[in-house]
Amino acid sequence: MNSKAITRAAAVTIALIAAATLGSELSASFKQLLSNIGGHHWIGKSVLSVVFFGLLYLVFAKVSDEKFALRDTGVLIGTVLISGLAILSFYVLHA
Image (cartoon, rainbow, N blue to C red; front, side):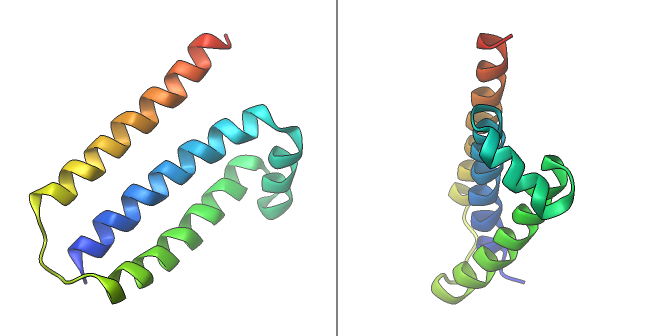
């Protein structure tokens, strides 16, 4: 497996999950779309996440070399922190 492709696909997927989480809270129609995918918006978001991760992994595996760099880990950790802070900030401001 290509570690660089996995790390990059994970970073983009995490950002997508954060955007979908915020989007489903702001848009009832988007939340309904996610519910239509899996019966509940959380399940729909999970299905989309798995599909996007798989597709992104295939794309990144084709376009990037397998040389793993510490920078890739930093990007992944940064994405996790920024996404988590965005969701936390949204819920604190809308509580």
